[in-house]
Amino acid sequence: MALRIETDRFDAWARLCTESLAVARDEIDALNVFPVPDSDTGTNAYFTFVSGVEALDALPPGSSPLDVMRAFAEGLLIGARGNCGTILAELVRGSLRVLRDCVDGLSAHEVAEALGAASAAAYAAVGRPQEGTILTVAASAAAAAREAAATDDDPKRVFDVAAGAAREALALTPTQFEKLARAGVVDAGGRALVVVLDSVAFALTGRTPSPRPSMVPVPIVEPGSDLGEDGPSYEVMYLLRTADDAIPALRETLEPLGDSLVVVGGEGLWNVHVHVDDVGAAIEAGIAAGQPFRISVTHFAEQIARPAPVTGGRVIISAVTGLGLADLTTRAGGTPLLFGPDEPLSVATVAAAIRDSQAEEVVCLPNRAGHIAMFEAAAAAARDAGARVAVLPTTVQVQALTALAVHDPGRPFDVVVVAMSNAAGATRHGAVTIAAEDGITMAGPCRAGDVLGVVNGDFAIVGAGMAGVAYEVLQRLDLATAEMVTLVVGRDCDEATSEAIAERVCRESPHVDVEVIHGDQSTYPLFLAVE
Image 1 (tube, rainbow, N blue to C red):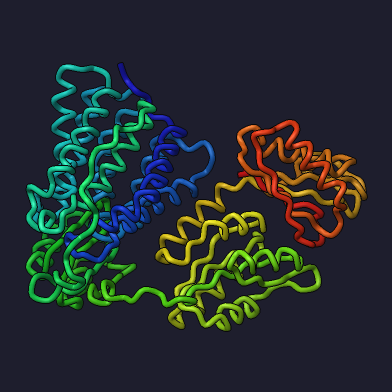
Image 2: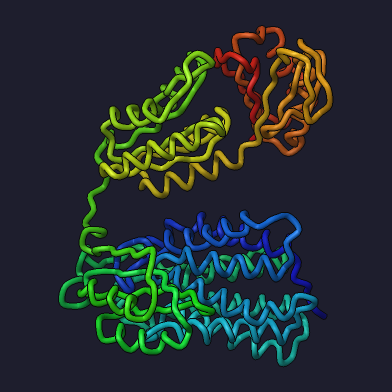
């Protein structure tokens, strides 16, 4: 019995891992007491996988499974963040060195071999392996897979056994590492690996792992207690271009400088991570070995002691067209930035809005594809001035409304950005407008005055009646699986039309809630959203 590695299935697994890490991110951050209690292990794991998925997004259609695996591995390597992210990248890369030779069929034995290769690669990458950490969890999964493969030829069952063993090993990490036992937590990196392995198991079997009692994720260490005498003060990371045979000497140079040394990569590109007091010496070692770039230095004391944002220290700037949408944005806690055919936005306008907010944290919702670049440019200037600014790539205003709905001012900035991004990205959106002149659309030719239906950014329907076209747009947005439909009514849509659409949805899809919002926007009589 063998499994085929297919492009679509690999892509779906990578995205499932990323989504699962996003969900578990807060929990994993709270567990973080080793190697430094800076509460970022979940964040680093998540963004490492985000980098891998971004590499997949850059591939052309029709890429082979080998191309997909190669791109994902390189994306993880280049985007690896922190101690946990770097080790996770090497675990995946180690397994892929086996899996790339098993594209046509993956046996139970090869599952065990891939997990063994992953564990061996991670141990080899770490300067001073510490048991009771992600390394132990990986080794336990590999050992269980080896044992299962000796008597079972089903690769799915073998991997399921390995994932279960990883969860059991995670629960035992406090018995192996005194620092975890004192804090009353399991290892954060090990928890991140369990999330990844459980995602693989779910992708293979379709079964969600049984929940197990977890240690209470409330570290009792004092902020900064692991700094100073007990450990180095800085985290240094950089990518390094050098020949593979230069790495042993680099390890020998970096090893005595500090701890948490992890060097992963191969074929001329490496990711170097180390905790040191002498930042200059760590970077000079990279220069001596090859060409370091993307150098990152984090001072742990500043990271741990960073104060929470003061009340009112965060604003959400949302580009809107129409006084109704502006009012709705304000009532939802955002700051509207009006634009229209006669009032286009510019980098200067956006930069002024960010600057005038005087906020420490800013979330920007461009709400139009053409706005994203100018928001990014304005955000870069604000970041140089010391603000934390995130630009979410929203292309329509209904995405902004969904993002605003999940904003929680009491949660950390990075957590809020992920939640808002996920909400906006999950919103299926459409619109209805009127053709101003004859032309050709993706749905065929149209004449001036025809009603055009937009589905996820493309003209997909040409019709005569606004209510009928709007309902067709909703159907193409998968109305059958919807829980909520939002109609944002513009100044050129009369009340009778919006009521007719809402009534039809309620009649033919009684499981769906309908919300009608008066946006007063021009150009598009209707914006539509399905959640």
